[in-house]
Image 1: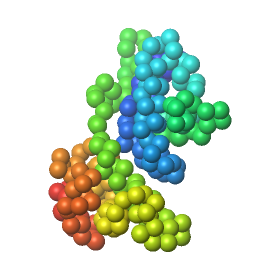
Image 2 (image 1 turned 180 degrees about the horizontal axis):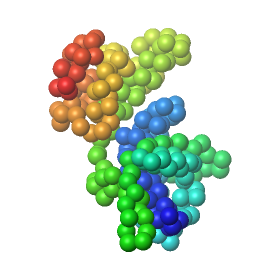
Image 3 (image 1 turned 135 degrees about the horizontal axis):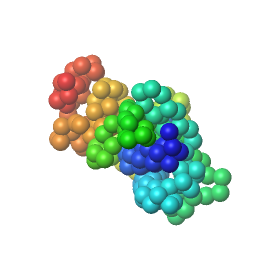
Image 4 (image 1 turned 90 degrees about the horizontal axis):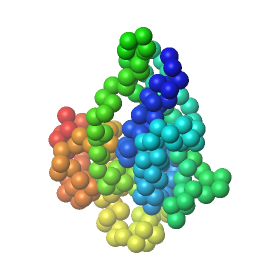
Amino acid sequence: MPAPEIERTVAAAACKILNDQAAIATAAHTSGLAENQLPTIFLAAEAWRKRLQPEVEASVVLTALVDRVDLTDTGIRLSLKVPIPDASGQPVVKATELIISHLFPMQIKRRGVEMRLVIEGNGAPASRADPAPLKAVARAHQWSDDLLSGRARSMAEIAERERVGARYIRRLLRLAFLAPKIVETIATGNQPPDITAEALAERIDLPLLWTEQEQAVGIN
């Protein structure tokens, strides 16, 4: 299979990853990055995605971004290492790199005498997840970890540190125990339109059982 064909397929997959803010936010949270770094990381990812568009520059960009590519019979797993910029938006020397991985289902199709790699759904617009509820869930997990690890002695201490009311901390902390199915639905942008960060934190009374939570937010 020609190398340019593989490069074009990897570039298309990389563009989809860099356009997926939900995946970027999840990877950042898993890596322990501060929430206030997300806007800068999103801008950096968009800048890298735009640089992938001209084929003349794609090879250079892929060399800088690609951490690993695994081809299988059913798909392609691509891992990107996105440099985390400083507050000015410029990559810093020896910067920490955010690793983002995704498995793309793939088919091999013949085109004349050549073979083509075709990523399923390629060309379709990526789902646009609402970053606000994702950030709320990430903050809840961070605060819960702070309390469990002893980094914060009380919710009042977190409230003072974050400069918000103690009631807001109590309400948002519930999202640390949100059902995985709800988090996954929000991450893919498929939640009901009225499921916002404010609704989850203030308006919806979330039960303890995950199945009851799913019913409460309208996700079955």
